[in-house]
Image (tube, rainbow over all chains, first blue to last red; front, side):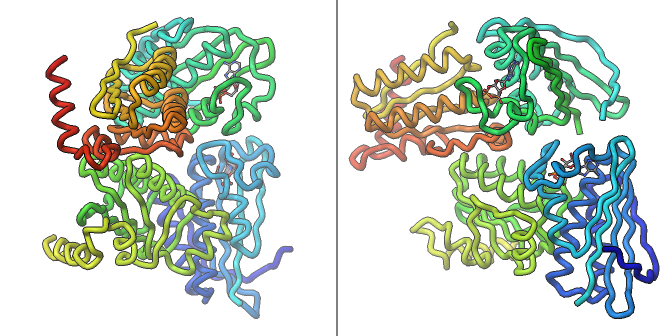
Length: 139
Length: 139
Length: 135
Length: 135
Ligand SMILES: Nc1ncnc2c1ncn2[C@@H]1O[C@H](COP(=O)(O)OP(=O)(O)O)[C@@H](O)[C@H]1O
Ligand SMILES: Nc1ncnc2c1ncn2[C@@H]1O[C@H](COP(=O)(O)OP(=O)(O)O)[C@@H](O)[C@H]1O
């Protein structure tokens, strides 16, 4: 289900190093507070963003994150988009399986962050990079 | 993702007996020191090499190991290739599963050594032997 | 690489208080530093205070589990203390269980859990306070 | 086959100090030798000093776990001592936990852990020193 929220300003961060992942967490936290998410929802969203930004760095070979405060008339929310021009994901079902990793991780990044947010979608193909979009709304 | 590192000299060792596995460890240690890996990274790489050389001996029926000091301009590293002309691995996903062994091992050699190095790739097919390549870079 | 995380020694226990938003390389460095300090000092316990952490994602969660496993093979016990409720809720939903890791409410209880019989919790805390002052 | 690993007897404890890069057949031989020596001497404890080992891979890790299990059924306790921090970190990442194996910082603590009440750690250490001199 796609909502067409009215956006305010979009913040963009490059993801090229471990320190950028920390910066993404901080930016998402700030916008989540602006959106008046509860503390638990903030924590879930920031945790998901940390997982996805790390994937952008480690598997995507670096990329960028866009974070924006959104509103649909009734509620405010946060949308974050993680994109890279890396190798893409060939078998998305497998990649979304709890515990599956092609590298050194715990295999919880994609599957777990999907559970932590309200809306989650992935756009990827072998050779065509990866784009993950997440949204969480205030209650 | 494949880097195309510029190689220096390649050392080659036969793996035909338990004592050769020890020799592989020692060679990898020497090259890891030349590449200025940290002590922990040296230990991880040598441990992975020990596992893979043992597999070459036990499952591959013997083979050889090539070790080289590599550089990509920014960093130095160690590449090691373990190859045999043994039976190959029919089900690679299974072989890469923690705890799975067709023999008497703990089933941690492949899965564990993948975790211990930075780059890990296997080329194998039933009847066509097995070739495992690992690379670790200095930080 | 960002700043490394300081490790205090209190009696036979090491105390690590993570006060910063932990980046991945710093977490790995902490793991190595702790292993080295346990061996060098013969510490029997490690208390990791994560009350300063706003999130524990899968990377940090794995680091905590690894520290517990590493210290176990080095004959030391690890206790993670101070986890915020929102962090606990999120970790579970993420799928992290921290199976092999002992936890306690706060530093005081963590130290008490680890102190050998002859080092009473009180004396350990006095030592801790003294150590903090002297920094 | 490379050189076998010597086994010392100190009080009612066997002490093995692995000083070489252990090849697989030597590790298996050590396991057999230890089982034989426990039975022959009625030793109640085994201390395996691995401070000389630069790595513990899955084969050596399994050997250590097997020695612990074998000595247990022969009514002796095993303690592995002297593991280097880099080895501990690597073992955990490899996936080895040494679950059933007791560990201690060094030979001294390992011997003390095993010494029966009437053999104080000190007397055990004196015996160990004397034994070393007499070699
Ligand atoms: N941005 C990405 N580009 C390419 N592959 C990815 C990306 N993100 C995830 N993947 C693939 O999906 C797998 C599972 O990811 P995840 O669930 O986050 O677990 P982990 O990060 O622990 O490997 C990764 O191991 C990787 O193969
Ligand atoms: N070089 C090889 N040639 C053929 N089969 C191999 C080779 N290396 C590994 N394997 C197969 O993969 C399985 C898993 O290997 P590994 O994870 O190292 O565990 P273990 O060595 O304990 O069996 C082996 O039991 C074997 O069946």
